[in-house]
Image (tube, rainbow, N blue to C red; front, side, top):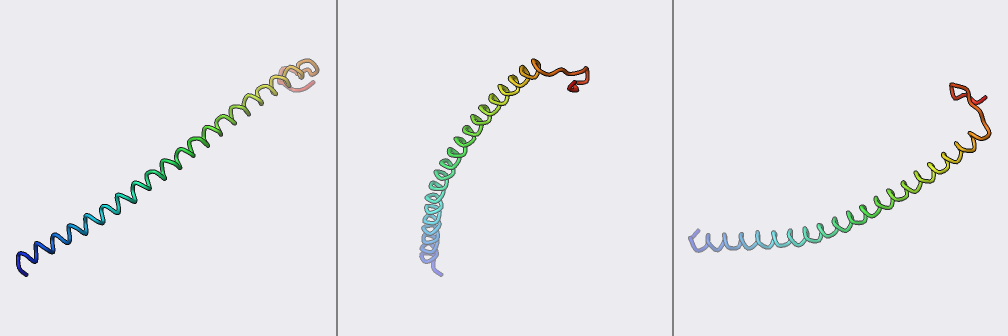
Length: 84
């Protein structure tokens, strides 16, 4: 094979590599945007769950405090916390 033919073959190979890398780059750009969008949705869902857990915790604490007050007014316990 002549030097010119080898140079032309190398040029074609480099061109193919460039095209392939360009395609990979285009796919990665789209993938990064998709991952970012999904992570944003996931973060929002976690914030919603945390907010709901806080509301439930507050509600349970209020109920427990009310039950404790009502129970103290009507029930008596011995030293081992057994109902008398």
